[in-house]
Image 1 (cartoon, rainbow, N blue to C red):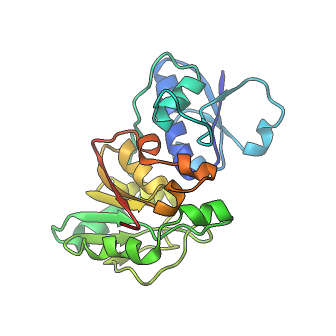
Image 2: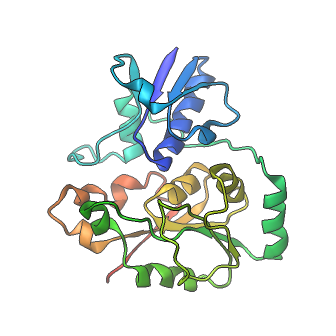
Length: 247
């Protein structure tokens, strides 16, 4: 039995699902410690709450500190593979099967042939470093406005994301879509947009194009948040377009 653990975010759980798929294909039995059990839906694994991992010495840590220097120039996902002592950088994938077919059919029907743009508003910062990393709202919303040729689907769940009516959408699922629903919608998404959060990470895992906005204030800071750079956070660089909230 391999006991897998990662950092706490939803995007981290997407990374952890990729590690789980890899280990299952090797014939391993896997227990996952996570606060996001829906991410592991459909997989033959044991799911345990994160509180039960305390004091364990047998955890396989699929996580890497972004606060440290990255002298080897690894992406964070590659660094997680190294931390877990995998013999190689594994494939970042999700292999998701749709659960809510009615919702996916609704998106496709209402899009009426338009490409689907999936996004969520800016995240709610809970400390000074997170505030520094949060893009300016006007610049962020401008990207959404500029993609008016798409059928825009707004996701996000309070209290993690701010409810922002300043950016347009054709389908508003803010606060009304589960994690499973969001992943289902992603299967028919054509372009994804967000600050660095689970939205771009989900796009990467599904091999889809995405736009990721970074804060210039964070990148120019003397704080450790300056290490949260595109070259570290984006693994499949051929899929991503990086934009900034200030010129």
